[in-house]
Each structure stands twice: as C-alpha cells, then as structure tokens.
Length: 307
Image 1 (tube, rainbow, N blue to C red):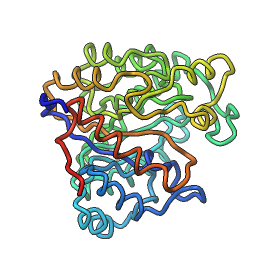
Image 2 (spheres, one colour):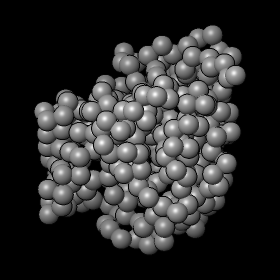
Image 3 (cartoon, rainbow, N blue to C red):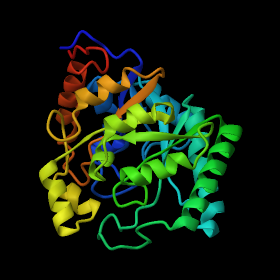
C-alpha cells in the first residue's frame, strides 16, 4: 500500500462500472443494488450516470444517497454540439441534468457528444469527422452551453472524449480545447477513451493542466484495441470483447496517471469507470472492490477497511 497519498484527488465510481448505460434496460441491475454495493465497496463519491436511472426527484435522490453515506460528484449527459437545429433540445436536456446535479451540491456535469455509431448495432449514424465549419459551430455551442449552465445552475461543463465520437483522438481533443473558453468549459479526462483513440494521457495532463476539471479513470486492453483497428469495430462490440479491463491490466497505467494528476494545483474527482454493459448482476461488485484496492495502492483514496 502506498503511503504517498494524492491529497488533491477524490475517488469515486459510477453506474457505468455496474453495467449501466441507459436510464432503463432489461440487462441492468436496480439502482438500489448499485448504491448498496457502491457503499459496501468503500466508495464515498458517485457520479449520477444516465438521467433517469437514479431518482430524478431531488429530495428522493438526496435520501437514497445520504442514507448510504454517499455524496454526488457530478452528473452525466449526452448532448449534440454540431447540429444547430438540435441546440434548443441540447440546452433543455443539459439544464435538466445540471439542475439535478446542483441540487445535490455537486458542481460538475460530464458532457458527452453523441456517438456516430449506434451503441447496440454498431451502425454508423452520423458524420465521423467534423469539417472546419462544424468545428466553429461546436466551439460556439460548447461555450454557450457552458456559460448558461454556470450562470443558471452554478455547474461547470466537463466535455468527455469518447470512442466513436468526433472528440476521440488526441488531435480532436486538442482542437476542442483550443477553441473553447476555459472559464466555462473544462475537460473530463477519460483515461480509457483517450487510450482508445490513440492519445497520450500523461501528455494531455502536462500540457492542458489548467483545462482538466474532472477525471474518469479506466484502462483498455491493447489486444482488443488492435482488433478494433484491424476489424473496424464499434465501441459496443469492443466492450463485449472485454476492451475495458480492471487495473493493473490495460493501458494507461493508473499509477502514472495518479502521479501526474497529484502534481496539479487543483482538487479533482477521479471517478472509476469500467464499461461492462451488459453483464450479470453479480459481476461488478468484486471488480469494484479489487479496483479500489489497487487504486489505493497507487495513492488514490484513503485506505478502506472492510468489515
């Protein structure tokens, strides 16, 4: 166990690590089981996950979270930035999530661009790359969403690079950051999705330190990533093949990421995500325990004694 704790980092987890991708789905476990097991595994913080999975009534959510000794780190939302005709819908959707997030005292909303592949079929359903005009639209839209959410709800938008999205590779991540306002828009550094897109997490932390507002920590199996590239697989199929793995397997090295993040002059939530959809209901908990123990050994989070 490392005695060198990263004091600026707060460890949490998310419904994603329990196989939850959708508000309601026959392959997902009940939210009460997720919350119970999250607390039992020793996590203090949680991200809300897809809107509608956990209770959306603020008082009910506060009760469910609080009675288990948990706290909310942030919310999660998908939103379109490159289609102007969808902007009003995006604002309404993000505002709903931002209001619920703020009601729990949390200050971060993780914003994920819609995927250009269908999550279940893998079919391409949107443009794969943005052209110059679309990038201008994206930058302006992100700045506006960020400003509105900050002014109306007091939250910061943390945009999340994602496999099968137009913000996936490191050049795309940098293009997004270079065109957006750091006052209202931050980066949710998802270490696994950065690796999925061929990026360098440590390099991003070092060069864009002031833009990192939130972190998802996960690892990807290099062998499955090779299959993705060789066969042109969609992310859903890659997950089924086990692309997302628990530490210490996979890339990037959690210890390297924690070391770099610990050097930053900022307090950050580091939220565990291991994409498991779909999975049997008894699979996530032991993984969550082992993952927490490993991250503790890397200096992330205080040592937790289970009884």
